[in-house]
Amino acid sequence: MEIINNEALSQCIREAVRAELQEHFRTGSTLPPQEERLLSKQELAAELGVSLVTLTDWMKKGLPFLRLHKRVYFKKSEVLKIMTTKIKD
Image 1 (tube, rainbow, N blue to C red):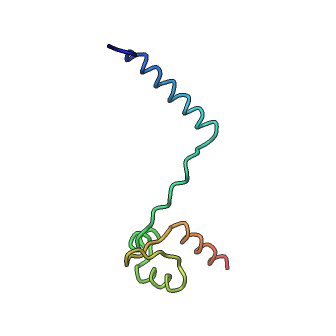
Image 2: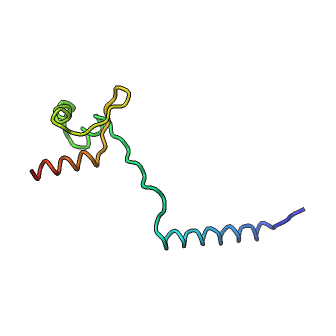
Image 3: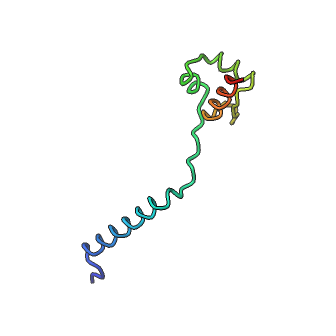
């Protein structure tokens, strides 16, 4: 026994998706901001075009980093923020 046919179900889904998309674009995204991916020392050094030794020196001078289970990670936004502030000073 069929309660709803495939065409009616398909139409119902299309209308629901259309309504959700219209609401999404009308009110803007309500999703929480995506968390920033952490960069390893190697990744950050490659992105900045510096050696690991230089990066370690910068860490000693106050470059912000996180230590997780004996590993060091960086938030690129924090690194760029402090670098631009230091340049302005």
